[in-house]
Length: 113
Length: 112
Image 1 (spheres, helix red, strand yellow):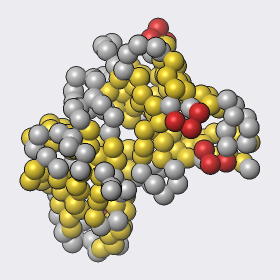
Image 2 (cartoon, rainbow over the protein chains, first blue to last red):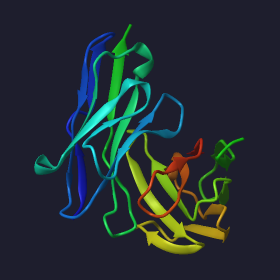
Image 3 (spheres, chains in turn blue, green):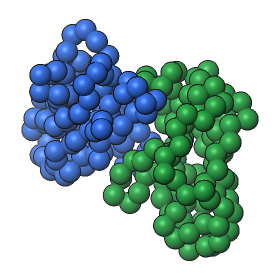
């Protein structure tokens, strides 16, 4: 069955630290991959997405993610986090053929000022 | 100029009551969704409609009934509310079933 696994449930960083959030998926076909962010008290919004082409995808607010097909991974990175990046981050897998986008359990990031 | 809107934003009610949540999108999308987010932030798909047709119906109690009067609206009616229904319910829409989803602001339901 298709699945999305986010390795870190809680991450605490100091401002200016580098960030990498892990995401692995399980699906043998063509995939669409997403990272969504949910700021405290708000709804989910898209950070970036990968459908095809360059496996290094750049998103909003300095985030990027790299699709590594051989590792079934789509890790999210940011070289220097800010306090305002404190949020919940969700990795998601689309195009599973079942009309369903599958979300990971989320990673809660807290950035200390 | 809200893309996906939900009403109400907060809903506090007693066990056993019936309540509805409304969702509207003005993005011209053909697919709409209902998600339930629990206190641990886990996001679970409940229903999805594509062009007003139900295409996803996860293992959700029969007390939950979605209705899509047109492509721009997807409402959720809940009968006989239970304590475990307390959560934040998000509506979302997308063009097609595999593209970016746009989420509404959420409805925080509290069942007492």
